[in-house]
Length: 189
Image 1 (tube, rainbow, N blue to C red):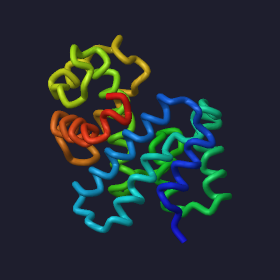
Image 2: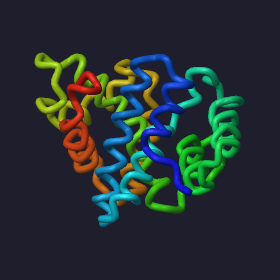
Image 3: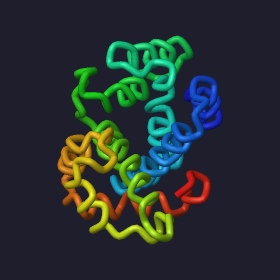
Image 4: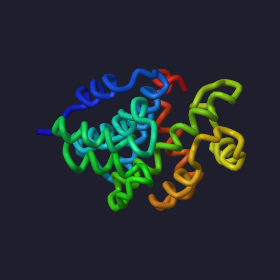
């Protein structure tokens, strides 16, 4: 029996107290739902699964912030609680150090959205209106070249993620911005 989005959110809230991390998870969830549709998925249960992967991708990060623990602990928890291997593997695939091939559209999409959602959030915070709906794609691509800006964001993931999806970077940036607009108020953008 597949788990529901409500169960995923409860798990996220159980392990993540940080409002910023919860909002990031929600943003990645929404970007993943948009990616599922972009890949031609119309089945709502499948779109929800993609969203759940986005929502849970960092659920254990706050308590396990190192490469030695993040996702290693999380994957064990997910398996113990009966989450499908497809979801566990997709979540684990977003970190290079896990060594899991990104061989499905689901895995490629998570990799392509995770860091970009965080980077877009950082870009919004320095814009005059502080609204994702007003964020130009060019502003994001320009800020990507500024290594001092949002230095914790792994730009390699952003560039390689867009490439893995077969999308030019500006197109992917615009796509993710558009995906975040409907939940902007909820996630503080």
